[in-house]
Image (cartoon, rainbow, N blue to C red; front, side):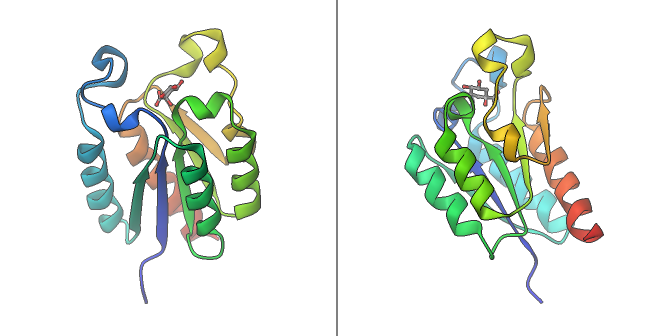
Length: 148
Ligand code: DQA
């Protein structure tokens, strides 16, 4: 049987990782994170689909496409975390277990980053561990999928 699919969705400006405020977001590129996720997922018996867009509608389309197909979603919606009811609604409609990830600790930062619409649809949230947060999210989903 094919491995369960985990969709990993990344929002705006995350394509600039490695160059973008490395003191906040680290030195790894998004391609580095993708490679680490694919390798870790394979060890867990999972298959990763890794996506990034600067456009809100792309994220909504990918999340909609996960319904009935993916076993889990990992979302780092970037700045849309704090603004997007559309992404929240897509996650609620998808009915797929979601783990929210942020590289930085959003609660140590500006007030406007403290609220997350994504959190309302997420099983849990991991923030402040840099790129390792994606690995922790894969571990959490693997456990949830096996347990169900
Ligand atoms: C982020 C935190 C957001 O506030 C910010 O807009 C991002 C990245 C993070 O991974 O720490 O783009 O989601």
